[in-house]
Image (tube, one colour):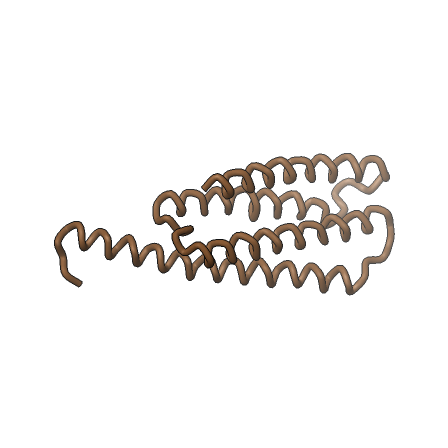
Length: 149
């Protein structure tokens, strides 16, 4: 549980810092206010996918002991976090290029796509682990109530 809490805290700090970077970098480079750049998306991805989702997973861990399936939980944790980091890094890179008036490349889109694939894989593994944990909790509840399945 401490790993989830620490990761959520780090995402909160990096998410807030990315918002500050977005605001100051666009001002510094006289980027027109209101014009789209992916820098703002990095801020929301880090706060939502990193901070908020991991706090929700922390609550699920407390309720269902998802990490009891150690291998599944480790796969979820590393796949998901790699996806968040890779996706957010590509948003910052692409957004910075936009602010600087540079062309983005297909490579950036491809790497961002890989980040989204890792996020998806991590979410699937999370649901497999959650399903097992909920099943264990249900069996334990029925057993403690004296109900035979």
